[in-house]
Length: 198
Image 1 (cartoon, one colour):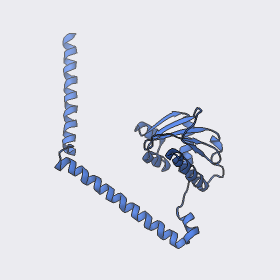
Image 2: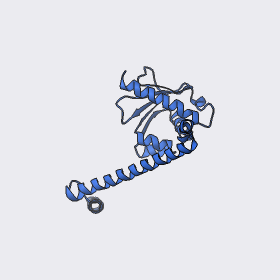
Image 3: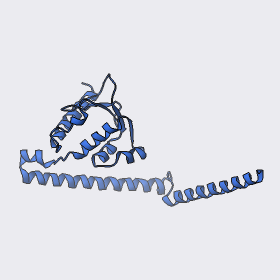
Image 4: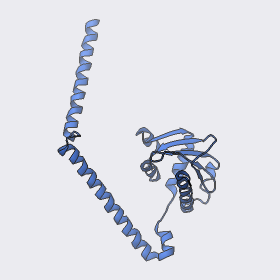
């Protein structure tokens, strides 16, 4: 079995489960039968979403698609959290080709899902234990994020202070100020030259 097929099948199963938590009983009715190509930055192959009940996900598709998204997983999470598509496009974190309205519907679909991870867990271990497991998991995740931020800060300090591979923030600010001053000076000289030519 190819890795691409495995990833597509896993995504299809995950989307099928997540759509059960959508408040609308038929969330795909508005975009039924349309096709979106999702090119994740983290994957070398595209994922094709066929908007049907349930969503079908393929790693290969021979026909034309209605919309194409080039995106990273972090940007996909930002869309899920309700961030504006137009802002993400302006920040060049998202590239859309094709039907923009279809992409908007997909973003609304993802944002409307109200998944509670304790719900399926409570069916196995009970409500109290499910909430404890969830709370512990969130605590571990939060602690992991803090450690990652701290490691990133330490790496930045090491590159700037010890290895001198990157400029310090104040050096960068000074450089930008110098470039702006030089640009203003060049504009002033250009204006003087045009006056002399006239």
